[in-house]
Amino acid sequence: MLHSRFIFSPRGLALMYQKYISGVFGNCPRVLCDKQQLLPVGVSDEPKTSRVKVYCPKCREAYIPRDKDVNIDGSFFGTSFPHAFLAHYEGMVQVKEPEQYVPKLFGFKICGKPGSKTAKSSV
View 1 (tube, helix red, strand yellow):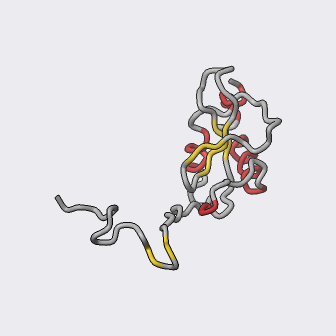
View 2 (cartoon, rainbow, N blue to C red):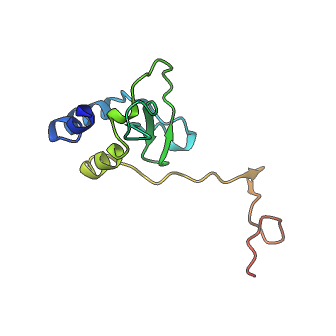
View 3 (tube, helix red, strand yellow):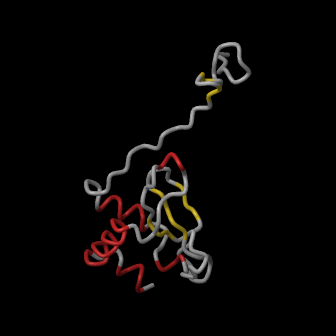
């Protein structure tokens, strides 16, 4: 796991920061994330368990990369890389809270109104 140790070093984090800023890992497929850059993440630290996934820091979800040719083992990055990266570059990487989708019908909110089936009961 030489690669996962290297990317946690100061030099490795700096190289990964440059890749993150340039958008090498792609953008979040979720519309409300507004094309947030992604970070690589492994689902397991054990080799040959699963391929690399990409993590969106805005919606905090892991996705399968869009490139079908990605055949990199997820353990090369480890399960904690995105979180350590974001903690290290806390001030430089801007991550806002994701917007919540509000269902509307002709511009009016349709969920949670008093008298509707989805209204929160105080019982």
